[in-house]
Length: 191
Image (cartoon, one colour):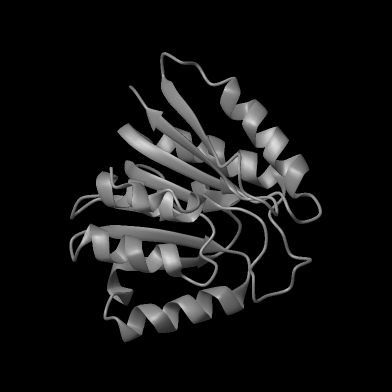
């Protein structure tokens, strides 16, 4: 691994995505936001792959859709205007290679619209069920906003209690950075 990716949790997550996803894979972006991860995922899965992208904010989906069209990648992505707690309403029998959550709020959007622990946990539970063997779940948790620290604690407790015979769980936390740096959790499904 090239250490230039130790800048922050977001860059580390991207590095893991690039090492995990292959052309033809099916992936899930549970918090589309401005589409940064969605675009990267669309490039990585190639023309035969598929991405499901969830967001509760129509502006986020519209912005992402526009970016995908500009890059010629829109046909690889199904954008869904719904919360990640409702994944099972859209994905049933497909095996997912990678799932990504970026928690908190949309930086350029309404900062009062934030991810919530109860819906995030439901989305994580469903994602773990859908993950293929050796599939990866990435959760970037931001704690600097109201409710962020509580959400992080609840998610960490849930991940801590996962059966180690079924999942490997890592926590990437930058301990010498100021201003509440995000924490990246990585989960690999073993069987």
